[in-house]
Every structure is written in structure tokens, then in C-alpha cells.
Length: 265
Ligand code: ADP
Image (cartoon, rainbow, N blue to C red; front, top):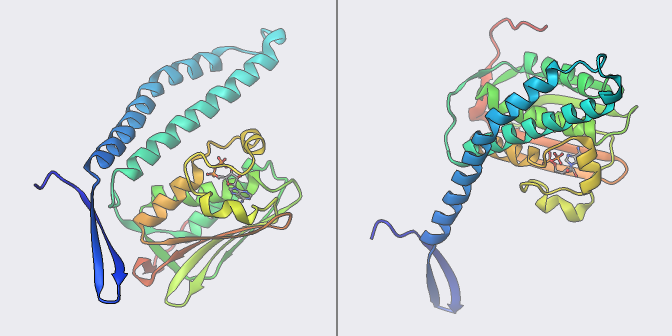
């Protein structure tokens, strides 16, 4: 029956006997699809009301209502957070429901790195030292939008989990026949026990610190999915109190010669 999905496992039984265990996972896959559709639909439906709330909040001038100023600021902050959460949920649903990239193009890495540096400085309000190394001399082949969102999540985390005065280094260099994009921070670090689960949806090391930092808990899941779509691997090395290194490893097939003039604004 083509409508049945089977999961097959071969288990050694004795010296020359193997057991083939077949499990019908059709219902599991169906439920997983329902979960994805539900999340995508709810996120989509939340978009319009949020835009309206956000729009009206923007029209309220705190100068006209000085008593309300702190409440207005908090409402704005929370509605912005909710908007980000909805956007991240939509992006994750989209990434989960495909195994191909929407479009492939040259990803100009020199301007990508400048953009990431600008974003890091803006997000951290210039309170970190941000350096960029661009020694790979090649570009990537993939989706600009998706890769930007993955790298920007890593850089955003580096800023949010590094106290003011700390350093953040974004490096793109060759590694064997491939290339690696590394985001290194001198921040709080991640305890080893948490590393295996850190890329799961909504998984957080310290809920209070992460909430305060303004993240949605979906960043690293998005990074993982985007890298998978580019057949790239994410490595995480971290030491509590010293900082973390997130490395995205790209194979030679994803590299393109950098032979055009880039605009570095
Ligand atoms: P969040 O929105 O909570 O930052 P992420 O999926 O991006 O969600 O990250 C998951 C968790 O991993 C974070 O809540 C934080 O505990 C931890 N984390 C991610 N990046 C870093 C980092 N650079 N330094 C320390 N902890 C990090």
C-alpha cells in the first residue's frame, strides 16, 4: 500500500541472524504534518491583528500622554516581540516543509559580513567590540535571504549573550576544500549538558536570561534548518564564563569564485 510509511530497522540478533523490524509510522507522520500546518495557520492568522495593534501603538505619542509613556514603551516592546515570534514561526514552518531551497544564487560574502557587523553593533548599541575577518576569497552559492537570517541569528545571539564590553568575531575563511563561517563571542557560554539539545525549538539554557535578552527561542532551530538546506553543518564549542563559537561548515560544492566587484556600504 503506497499510503503506508514504514520505518525499517535492522538489528543484529545472533552471529548470522538479523532481525528486520518494520514499524508503521504513517499516523506519526500525519500528526507531525497536522502540527506543522496548525502552527503555520495560527502564525499566519496572527499577522494581521498584530500589524493593526502595532500600527495604532505607533500613532500614540508618549509626549501627549506623559503618564502613559512607560506603559506605551512596554506595549510596543511586547508587540514587537510577538511580531518577531510570529515571523520566526512562519519561517520555521516554511523551512520544515521543504527539502529544497526556494532559489539559488551567489551570496556575496563581503557585503554579508559588513551587514552582519553593522547589525551586531546596532543591536548591542555599540557596546561590544565587533571584528570581521574575510579571508576566504570566495562567495557562497545558496539563498541570500535564508543564509542572512541564519548568520544574523548567530550574531544576534552572540550580542545578546555577551555582556557589554565583550568581543564578537565574525570570520569567513577557507577550510580544506570548503569554507567556514564562524561567530565567536566572549560571553556567558553554554554548559556542556545543554549543547546536544540547544538547536531544538524553544530550548533555552536559562529561560529568564533568554526572555530578557528578547529572543524567541527559535533562532538556532532556524539556523540548523537553513544549514541543512545548504548541506552545511553547524558545530558549537562553548565554555561557561569564556564564550562560545558557532561554526557553519560549507562544502566545496557551495563555493563560488568571487569575481565581481562588491558594494561594501
Ligand atoms: P533564543 O531566542 O532564546 O536566543 P536560540 O534558539 O537562538 O533562542 O538559542 C537557544 C538558547 O541557546 C538561548 O536561549 C541561549 O540559552 C543559548 N545560546 C544561544 N546562543 C548563545 C551564545 N552565543 N552564548 C550563550 N548562550 C547561547
